[in-house]
Amino acid sequence: MMSKQSERPSILLVNDMAGYGKVALSVMIPMLSALQLNVYNLPTALVSNTLDYGKFDILETTDYMRSTLGIWDELGFTFDAVATGFLVSEEQSLLVSDYCRACTERGVPVFVDPIMGDEGVLYNGVTEASVEHMRHMCSVADIIMPNVTEAQYLTGMHVGKRALAEGELLEIVQALHDMGAKSVVVTSAAVEGACAAPTAEGGESGVRHVTLVSEQRDDSDEPRLSLLPYDEIPVRLPGTGDIFSSVLIGRHMNGRPLVESVQAAMDVVVDMLQLCKDNDDKYKGVPIEQYLDRVAS
Image 1 (cartoon, rainbow, N blue to C red):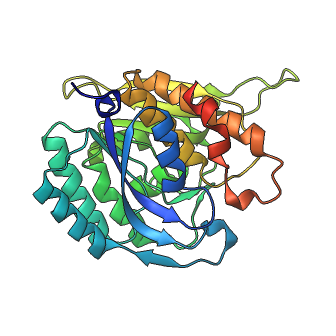
Image 2 (cartoon, helix red, strand yellow):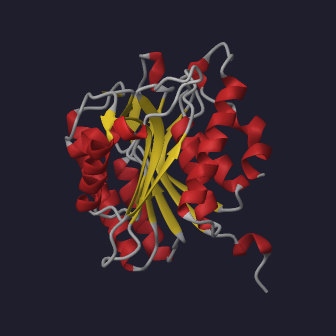
């Protein structure tokens, strides 16, 4: 008889590990474990600290990754899903995309978070070459989860615009589908025009903050679009994207519909921002171990 532990869905996380600060694997491993998944990891890089501090060191692990994947293949290790995040080089992105393509051929879902930038700019240390590397991953993704800045850089559309017309956002989403992504979740989008929301004073704000979900159900259907509005909280904390993707992946792998999983992820991020908005050193990110009960509820 299988143990309860072995019945949990398994997931391989392909992402970086920071020594100082709660981002990437140091966020996703405890969160997805709390969401009842068996979690395994393949670090793409060892990073001294979160990039927000401005000074950092990165040790690329491509050779280790290639050797590890070879050993796992010999041992017959498989996973129920794969989730990718920060990739360091073209060589690494090709290695990971080849592995993920083989997984999709076996029916294993692949989640891609193309970690590159936010608020209209690329992160420290992320180059235009890094953007091209992430485009490799779109073709093998079941679900891609860029924020609007990353979506703009991936498609080359409307780069630098802080607020988009609804039609412009839909153009970007369609381009991501055209790259190969089956379902697309675009976060942190400020949409103007038809989506504008009334302000508390009764006027129009001019923009509405939304997360857009575009589900490609099968090759014969048009994508099903959902716009999920939210109120922006003017606080920046590293790792909130990793929190978002963890909740989305965990809920979806446990059988919840994609839109419901996205809304749950949005709610958890808002909760974490409210809890940590007054932290002295925000560059550390969210001390997620303190809040796992909120994630799993």
